[in-house]
Length: 250
Picture (cartoon, rainbow, N blue to C red):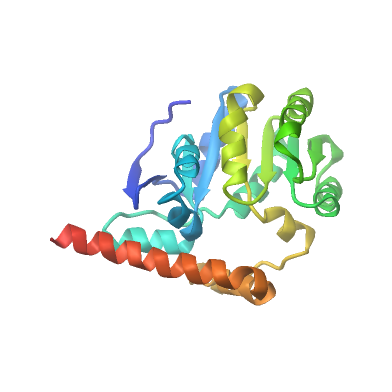
């Protein structure tokens, strides 16, 4: 789908200059007119990984909407004199779209996380809204051989929205690989959002989200899993920002 919007180029990745509200309006218009949108978010870790992972980079830049999920990306862009209006967090966008689905009678397929997590997410949304918004769900543990059967199940569900909560780069590559087969109006990778909705992981307080320390709150909850990834990604990101700044000056 060809969308008329502004994009900046930031550390070898395009990012759309969009607010949350503008993003929602584009998505709502696309679903109502049965157009196809592949949505992607970028954060510090993904920007860093895209520098060397060509398949991931291709999967991201092929997206119809590319939002800045991380506050670090917004600040980094500003430091390089490239303005982004605000952070559009993937989990917030997902929550807004679940509400939209309820209001507009759209159906959602939830793919990803462990079975007990995704089933709990579905249960929570059924109780909060209605069972009518659920097209189907499946956990995110599957082999490459199982992918086509899963894709067929999603197609048969006649979903209007697909959320994929699988770790990067698998979710980006999966969506990019099958989006033209799925033909679902809106598809989006949502990372660890199912964990947050289910209550397995707590979301950082608002002030930490605004000040860019949400990653640190997540680190405190899962230090063994997160420390190496955060240390590597944040230091590499800072290096890339400074390298780009000095390159421009020279």
